[in-house]
Length: 437
Image (tube, rainbow, N blue to C red; front, top):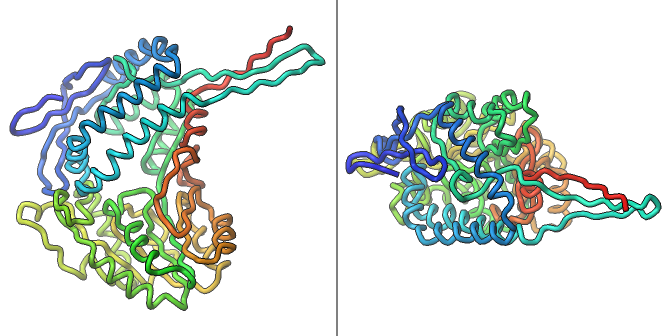
């Protein structure tokens, strides 16, 4: 990474070296709306160089023992942890999230992931069966598909989707693609990769429901649902954006939920008291605001947030991409606010009568990433969780992850899963070998 006092200049990282680019893109600090760094506007040439470096590094890295690769991953985790504050500051400035969230979640979770998989690769076993009557033995081996950390193993190429993204996913020597992002981008990736039959892992959007039954513990449910709706400005694919509340407790829930939402402070990312920072870009802020306008046009009611409450910010952040957490009611299930991923601090609260009704309504969107269920009835919790069309269902909690277990969505929320076994399966090719003796 190289830079000047005035402006940070990022560089690509290819074959173990930081390399400048002939063209750059401005990157904005979401909390001020000002350009704070310039990012390479890479293209086919940079992708070609990165693929060449990876191809040349692959034989040596893939032949290393699991123990050697485990040591490398643990070293990466150590280095991340040693520079936690530096990475947290960079992540907060780039994305607009609160510094506290970057310090306590983003960077520590990155460290945890490296350490988890450093341990996990030491404990995988292969399959073996015998056919004595034919004098044969069968066993499986797994061949690595991707590469790891010496020069050429990890390459970082910045750029836009149409330039560098399309060059990468359509390259014949890139055998698999792991992508997190929007459905339209995933559709384009699928089109470009189809001629090469690439393996795909696609983690896409969500329109995640929270279902709150009348026997829910509201003292636990309300603060957790505020967090699941507005954490990281609602810019988490797992955030709640549809809240279904049983009619008998709807009025009480709504009153307490709005009160709790209003206590969430929106402030500059470095403010230790801020619960929310800025959205990722000006264009995205306008998109999120447009959903609130459309809801109002449809006759919905805004209880707090956008257009209702005043946003107080320091002078330097007046041009930042901030928005108050917003709660919408009196909205139909067919509304765009109830069917499309907003990916911002906006959630809709609607009443329901019966268990069967709410399951049908919760499933009546094209997405199926995550859901939460709140009830003290254990039988109901299991029943509802089983019927929801979601890859993840949290009951009486939110965002508790176990890396051993699968992570991913159904329907338009993606293809494939991540997790210990699932990641192992995706990033390797399995081969069956038969030996006749």
